[in-house]
Image (cartoon, rainbow, N blue to C red):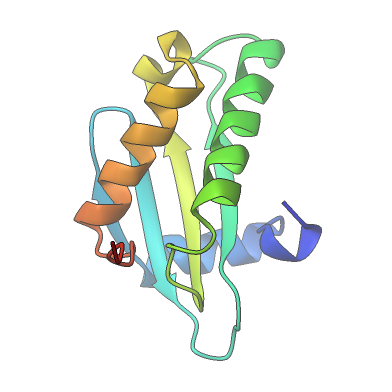
Length: 116
């Protein structure tokens, strides 16, 4: 995941929280904000200290980034996504996290239909 695809600044996070819409399932809350001037999507990650130690939190963030990397052709471009991990993610492996993210993105209508 390139640096250009990440949200790092607090002001960017706050804009997504205030103006974006949120969708959630038991594992994740995702705030989605349309940015028409952007040609690609950006993601911001928030994993609370309540979820685990630094090693666990970084592992969850790596899993989420990898899932988005694999979804890059299906996720709508021109949007900012802020992903907040909830407590159940601490016990999940990569494939469960990926499936859960796919579900919540479909609920938020940010997942393009697969043409088969």
